[in-house]
Length: 321
Image (cartoon, rainbow, N blue to C red):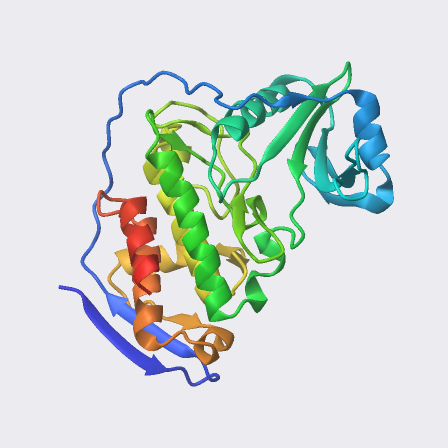
């Protein structure tokens, strides 16, 4: 039986929650191969001179960098009325155009153009030359969630969590279902009103497809490392990690121990698992009941068994808070 205890931590004005649960069993899921999804909204093919005009690839406008390449802020001017019709954009430029980078670029165009939902970043176009690959997106003023999750209040945090869950639900309800495989804080962008938009579709794949590619340390499901099989259950692991980070505001790794691994190890062993809810959330509306429900949901998402909830269940839980 599940047991819950709630007490105040001695090290500060935080909520301390802990519980015990029976030992969990490993998950065994079989999925059939399914055909690929086709693009519904073609991506615009830009020209090199247009991208240079929009950004000038100025180092002062460099707003991000990663394994794929650099991201520049730019302005796409309207032809009839440049001032009124201008639009801020983000242009991602690859380090090169070979191998996995090229495959990721293709996936970005295919899936980024197909996923039509308010909680996905809009891809506006693309370009390719002999050396590099280019992707054009709508600009997100607040940057990625990893930069600000530690200062969010309760209303902001739950709004973002709901938006992320809705985006994942959209992917999982497609026919065939899609799995993101790299859902993490840095891949969730925020607009001026803190509406979350999932970005980076380079690792998106059909549910149940075998692929040796894995996501990011701290978020990737260990089952993917063992079986090279990405499923919709894989995304639920990432959702669990994100919920833990949002409710605790802790770093995803501390003293070389991942937050999800630490919580699940104690959870599986039936030991008390104390998780501190950040004071900011407590002061702005996160009571003990809400905190308990979010942490329980996060740990169930990290479970290695069939007990992992569906994203639809998580959407409903977050909606009811």
